Image (tube, rainbow, N blue to C red):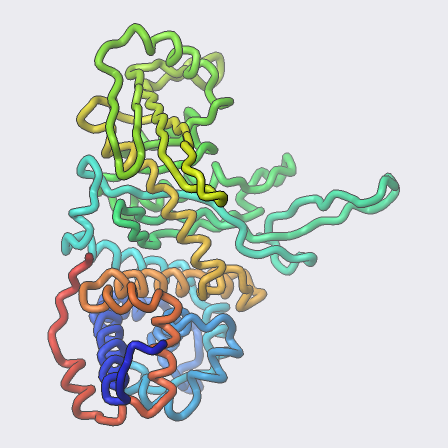
Amino acid sequence: MSSYDSPDEEREARIQATTDQARILRANWPILLKKLKRIPDPRNPKKTKHKLTVLMLYGILVFVFQYTSRRQANEEITNPMFKQNLCLLFPELESLPHADTLFRLLSKIDVDQITQAHLDLVNKLIRNKKFISYRVNNCYPIAIDGTQKLAFSTLWSEELQQRKIPSTTKTEAEDPQYQYYVYVLEANLSFQNGMVIPLMSEFLDYQQGDTERNKQDCETKAFHRLAERIKAAFPRLPIMLLLDGLYPTGPVMERCNKHNWQFMIVLKDDSLPTVWEEYNGLLTLQTDNHKWQNWGNRKQHFCWVNHIRYEYGPNGKKHITLHVVICEEEWQEVNDEGEIITKHSRHAWISSRPINRNNVHGRCNLAARYRWGIENCILVEKHHGYAYEHTFAKDWKAMRGYHYLMRIAHLLNTLARYASVLAPIFKQKGVQAFIRFVRSTYSGPWLDDVSDIEQRMRKPLRLRLV
C-alpha cells in the first residue's frame, strides 16, 4: 500500500527526494569536473558537439539512475520530459548525447584519468572528516577482494585472461577449448556501520604476466600494483588492510610493513603451518591472552598469541613478526521447526599489531569482520542495478572507462543513501526502489514549478553521514 494519502503529498515527496539527491550529486560535481576537464580530448574541435565533461557527467548519471545498457539509457533519458527535468536540475548538461557518443570517447581517451577524479573526491571527503568516526585504531579500513567481471568464448582483446574449459568427452585428439574473461581486483573503504565506499579497481592484464613462461597475470601480482597506487594516492593516510585467506604470504605482509599499513588477514587452517605450530605451542605459555565478551546476541571467546616469527623466502632468509588471534562464538537461533538451536563459528586472523584486551574487539569485530562489506558491495554492483557484468563495450579501454564511471556513480549513491536528509526514505523504500522512484519523477510532470525547484536547489547543503 502506498504511504501517500493525496496527490499533493506524493508530489511533495517526489520533489523533495529528487532535489535532495540532485543537491548531493551537484555538491560533488566541482571536484569531479576539475579533474575531468584535464583529460586530453582527441576529438576534432570543429566536429565536437558535446564537451568531454558533459559526456563524463552523462555517463555517471546513467549509472546513478541504474540503467543497465546503452540502449536502455538512450530510450529513457532522451525522452523530452526526462531531458527537460534533468537539465533543470543539472544545468551543466548543456545537451544530452547519444550513448554511442560516450562509447566512442571512452575508446580514445586515457580512461585511467577518470580514476583520478574518483580519488580526488574520496580525498576531499577524508579531508573534510566525513569518515573520521568510522576509523578503527585510528586507521581507515580498506578491504581488497577480486572478482570476475565478464566471460567470453572469443578473444576480442589481448588483455583478456584465459582458462581451459574441461572437455566433456575423453577424446584426447580434440583441440582444447578456452574461455576468455575479465578479472578485477577491487579496493573499498569498508566501515563498521555497513557503509562501503568504492575506492580503486585494478584490472588483471594478460600482458602483465610472464609471457615467456606462459604465465598470465594473477590476483597476487595485481595486489602489489594496487598497493602502490593506493600508497601514491594516500601517502600519509593511516590505513588498515582487510584481506581474505589468499593473502597471508610473506611478500604481501612485507609490502604492508613497507608502506606502514596495519592489516588483518584471514588465516585458514591449512595456511602457514609453521605459524599454526607456534600458535598452538605458545597459547598456554602466554598469560592474559584470553577475553570473553557478549557482542549483540553472540557470546565470544578471543584467544591470541603475539610475536610469532614467520620465516619466508629462499631458505627462509626473510622473516616477519606476526600476531594471531582466534574468535570462537556461539549464538541461538530458531530453526524451521520452531526449535531453539545453538550455533557455533570460528574465525582466525593475522594481525600486524600485538593483540590485547583493549584492542581485540575493535580489530576483530569492527575491522576484520567487516571485510564482508566489499563482498556485499560487489554483489550489489553485479545484481542490484549497476550492471557490473554487462559488457557495455567490447573495447578494452572503453570497457574499463564504463567500469570507472560506474564506481563513481556507486560512490555518489552511497553518499546519498547515508546522508541525513535522505537516509529515512532510503530506509523506507530500499535503494533500488528509491532510484526507481526518482527516475519516474524525472519521467513525469512533477517538476513543473520551475521557480520552486530552482529555489530548493539553491539551498546550502551540509553533507552529514549517519
